Image 1: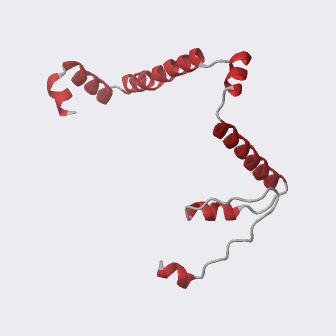
Image 2: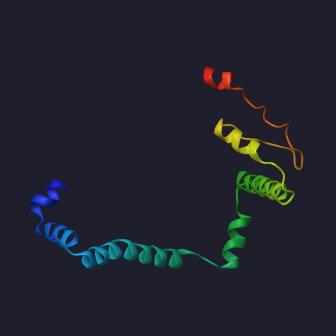
Image 3: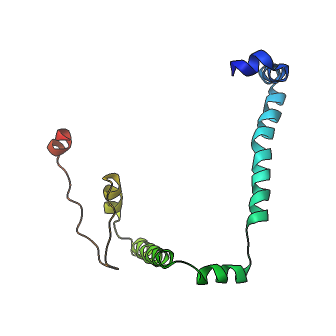
Length: 125
């Protein structure tokens, strides 16, 4: 930053203006935040494809592992949404995630609840 401050008169002017004038500060912050957002949105709209033929072609040429992962993810999502609909306790998922584990289950079969740790076990770790 000091290189900018020492060499650039424009940068020093911007810093002085934003320090001295609240309207200029808000205008500058808006330009720095909104303009990149608008440009990003335009790029996303220009590059996204809603062509059904292209989507069908990509799905036909998908690799086997991609298809398998899609199927597994769909099953897991269905299982999780079903658990939420049935208002089941899903805290064991979060406990396992905190431990770095992934819970894999047969569809519609709950695992046993995670045993509660005593304070002594937590202190030892």
